[in-house]
Length: 190
Ligand code: FNR
Image (cartoon, rainbow, N blue to C red; front, side):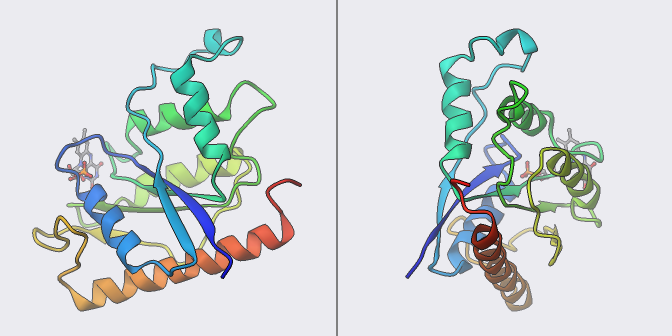
């Protein structure tokens, strides 16, 4: 069985994050061909081009962890109709210095949960715009805007609603197909 590694970034730093619960649910229903590693970014300083000549170790390690995986999955809340600043900062780090952008040709997908009715739709559009600029092939469909109601996903990632679980399973199956397809034409070492 060919497996593909997925690095996932959770846009929220909250200790009670519903997006962390969503991440657990997604991993739980994912096909066995996908393996998962969380790529944390909370210890990154605020990016400045002054760091380009000599990235600090935490930023080198962060960027390397993006390089080390076959694909990236963003699981993010919406903050003020965009992505949280910490996540934007992390993307800026991985994209620089100029000419060494770690997202180039790296397949990606976005998903998010919010308590609001539009389920992170605007944050995801902003994130998609960044990923386009960073030359990351994105899974365009299915889109997934999860409106989180209390009890929807438990601490172990179990989904209370059968329809939502089926939808998340379908999303992860589509992600597997997408990654395999992209890597068949854009191999990692090309
Ligand atoms: C929010 N929230 C929010 N929700 C939304 O649907 N659209 C938005 O623009 C915002 N803006 C926003 C800004 C800030 C600073 C906070 C803290 C929150 C509510 C948000 O969806 C809710 O807090 C989620 O629980 C955040 O996800 P995590 O952190 O629990 O994963």
